[in-house]
Length: 124
Image (tube, rainbow, N blue to C red; front, top):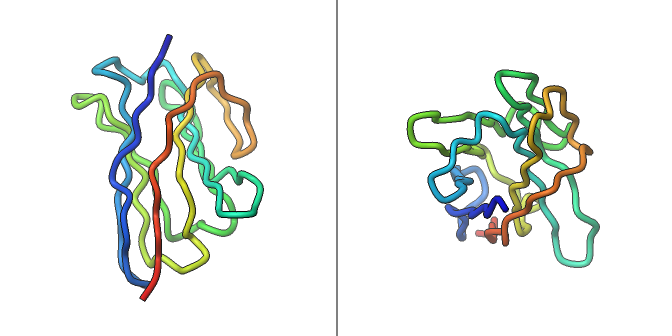
């Protein structure tokens, strides 16, 4: 059982940046595709990005393309979601999810493991 933990959320002003982290109790995530999702109050969950396993593709939703970037720190066993130029409409609870051996991902891919989420609020 893979237990994912997100961190890094908070309150930030429009135009600023945040970096979210996704870890799995020190377990390497190299063999897992990692998806980032968000859910705003009263809205359906939205796929934000995905990073496929073992160097596969990376994809972004149109709403965040050019502003968000996924990266992996293999040594620290962390997957990051760097969020720049944040907008009020980015306000949501952000979740990371993992699926083993998924080498080609899409923002709508399905995942077996999910974290509890971290809240991001973009407001002046």
